[in-house]
Image (cartoon, rainbow, N blue to C red):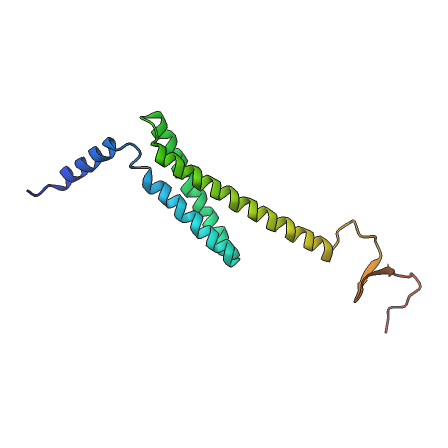
Length: 142
C-alpha cells in the first residue's frame, strides 16, 4: 500500500512524538560535528577556519540549547541526549582551556620579544639582548 506524502509526514511526526528527544538527536550530532571541525582547525592552526568553525559551533549550540529547553518544558529530555550534550560541553571546555593556554603562552612570548611600558625608556636591543641606555651625546648620523 502506497502512502501519500501527508500520511508519511504525519507518521514521522507521530514517531517523533512517541520517541522523546528524537528531534534533538540531529541537533546534538551537528554540535558534535562542529566541535570536531573546530578541533581540526585548531590542530591545523588555520586562523580563518578557526573563526568560521567557532561561529558555526556557536550557532549549533544556540539551536541545541533552545531545543533542549523547549523539550525540557514539554515532556523532558532523554538521558542519552543529556549525556551526549554534557560530553559535547566538556569537549568545548577542554578546547577553550587549550586555546586559553596557547593564548597565554603567546602573550608571554610577545612580552619577552617586545616589552611594553615595563621596559625602561631609552634602552635598545642589540644582538645580545637589551643593552645599556643610549647616551645623549652619541652621534647617530653617518
